[in-house]
Amino acid sequence: MAYGILICSHVPEIAQGLPKLLKQVAKDISITYAGGTDENDIGTSMEKISEALTTNTADEILAFYDLGSARMNLDMAVEFSDKTIHVYDTALVESSYVAASLLQARVDLPTIEQQLKPLKIKGDGHYCLSSIQFK
Image: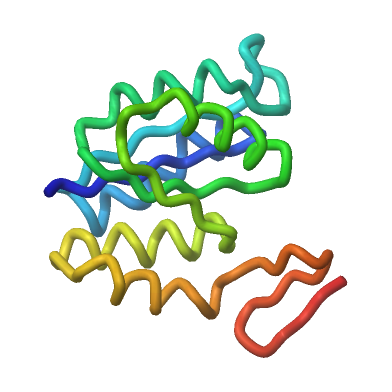
């Protein structure tokens, strides 16, 4: 089974740039992205996310996003995809980098998910990176 990564960001340049960083540690991993609205303004697009899911060559995708409405569009796109997609409520840059590097090293998914836990963004309005909390 091949794993891939999907990056979703409100900013087209972030969505385009982050895979460049990830490819430095994960040259063999399929990494696609969706950034900005259909007009390339700040925001997200379910259509762009769906296209990025389709063009990702992996059977199973680890998806990372930046803000809440990106999650909403990502969830809608997942509903229309035939692929297995895992969506993570984690810090975008840090967690996608961790996942990419571990996928390249052929680490199993449960171990990767364990490594992502400290980067989880809580759904109660608090953001938590390790033991530091922000509101």
